[in-house]
Image (cartoon, rainbow, N blue to C red; front, side, top):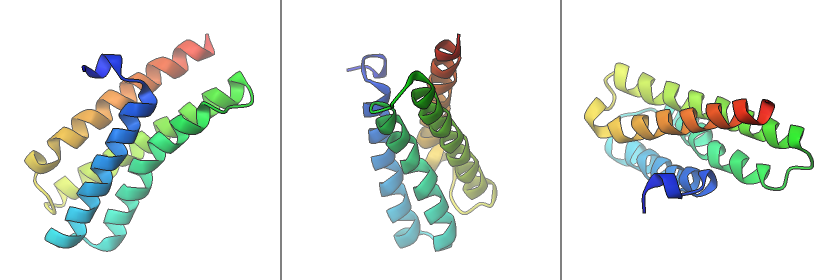
Amino acid sequence: MSYQQVSIQDRTKKFAVRIVKACIWLEEESKVPRTLANQLLRSGTSIGANCSEAQSAQSRRDFISKYQIALKEARETKYWLEVLIEAELVSLEKFKGLIQETEEIIKILVTTVKKLKE
């Protein structure tokens, strides 16, 4: 199944699972401070939570708001991944897939929000 056939809710949930596993690895196998791992965990799992909440939105405006929050969380997640890499706490190769997926999710959310606002 390609990602194009997967809903944003499913995709962000799978992403959240990857983030959880990455954060467990960060705490167990690397010297990353817990605070940084927790920041990544919070933002990375919040993306999917907000997309899921949007499914129960009370209005179109509420739906858009949830997706906008998910977008902000996705951008924050990318930020924390970049910080971990640039601080040389993890290698780019180790988190390259997470960064690529974060960028894809950002693109999807930007496009979705723009279309909904039209």
